[in-house]
Length: 357
Image (cartoon, rainbow, N blue to C red):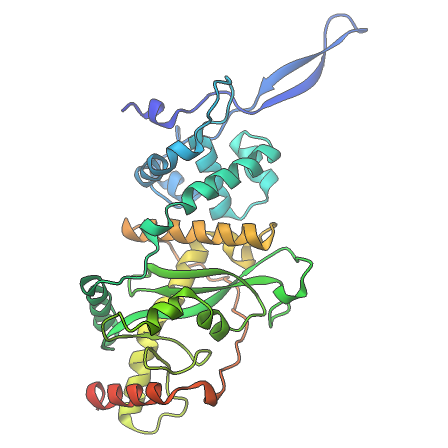
């Protein structure tokens, strides 16, 4: 298909009305002008990746997947094309610029940008079952285990789990204030060794403890169902030690315990790299790039969309350079010893004795 037809790009942009004086000083009329709209034409591949964090090829692929949901359904001459909406949203996600800045560069008004962003978010988030899936079949789980074992020598790891914070414009509820005293959403993720996000919980206030989010998530039900093959998640001391979630030993004494901790740290680092990659690609998710100027509900939709796009980038081997000014995460108090289960202690000891002695 012709590239111009594929993009469905209009050369004219959002309509603006300006008062213009004609030859009669007593008469004034309104003349419609149109700002040029955003386009991929004229950009080389390096510029495309810098501005949108994706290659032209992947942007086209994404556009095809959501085209039906974002193309205008009217015959108005200057209706905003779907590609313009998508590029505007990608630019916002990657740059963390204010709406007014992105809309000006996109050739659409700020109210239009806000409306179209909602439309693009809805379209991208419909792809969740395709892009963010915790595996349930043995083959898929084994592939994840193999990846973690290759990077860390830790056996049977089904994922690394942790939470990260995404700053919000202060809501009215103080429950969104976290331990670093700024307002945020506390976002739980589970990832594979290649930084692919397997599970996401994005709606909890910043003051919520990590272990509470896990306990009240659908993932908890999956892990406790008994329907999965033998395996475990790896988490830090913000989570309880269970038969399906292994944490480090607080004060390792033996060589085997120290080796276990070292392997655990190496495998768990996948989630830290995932957070760094995600927030470096989409600066709107890191406080160093500003805060989301939206409600918590809209913020959660943006987080979900960015995670879907992150997985798309991972699947297409689109690396991103980790920036060095990312916000340090708020400290999380460890869970009490009473929350660690006896089954978890036995499982961890069995793993140490079998694989690290």
